Length: 259
Ligand SMILES: NC(=O)c1ccc[n+]([C@@H]2O[C@H](COP(=O)([O-])OP(=O)(O)OC[C@H]3O[C@@H](n4cnc5c(N)ncnc54)[C@H](O)[C@@H]3O)[C@@H](O)[C@H]2O)c1
Image (cartoon, rainbow, N blue to C red; front, side, top):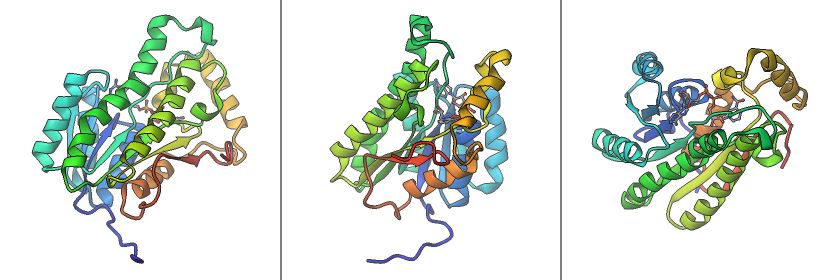
């Protein structure tokens, strides 16, 4: 059956976007609202969350919750709140993430290593654990979009915890995609190259420019990806137009990694 694309492809859908207070998550929330969805933003930064909700309010229904994706109780509470507010959860975007230290693999402290893996990988899994049963119970429909990274395909030097966490998120996408393939819940991930966001804020100033130049040098198109470009892909993956892709990895890297 051929369907004709319309202006608000997410009309009536309800989404959770983790790490939604700024950067890529905020751009995805904005795009989803413009496409007709309502959105629950989860984040750990209260002030940024409040700003984000204020910015988004003219576009539609945007609610927020202070949810640290590492904490299974907070995740469960956030999922219940979204269900109570919206009646259902159609879309989960696992976007919350941190870059971690830019040092060799052996120079990470165990605490740094665990923090990156806890947020970027275990956090995404905890959110799936809370939301998948809800999606399965409601007319067998859902879309999960995981924001991974080219680092998860290539393994960036001086960023091992981050790269390992994103490789893990790609594998989680594939496992969950297979498990849910016949259920109507589709699970896909996006692997952006560098976007010019606050994710680099934790990098010491003396290394920041060097890191940004090194990342850009690897992108044949020679520029950062715009957050709105990632949001456009996340919108398609959340829509009914995405109907025969699951467990898949969608590149958006300006030609950096063509696999
Ligand atoms: N910016 C890039 O170059 C780039 C490239 C590829 C992939 N990504 C991925 O995109 C996602 C978004 O990155 P961004 O560039 O917008 O970064 P960002 O730092 O601007 O935003 C990340 C958001 O996640 C939130 N967050 C951090 N820890 C959290 C936690 N424990 N629980 C809930 N929220 C938490 C932060 O408060 C922040 O609002 C990340 O997963 C990142 O790894 C970014």
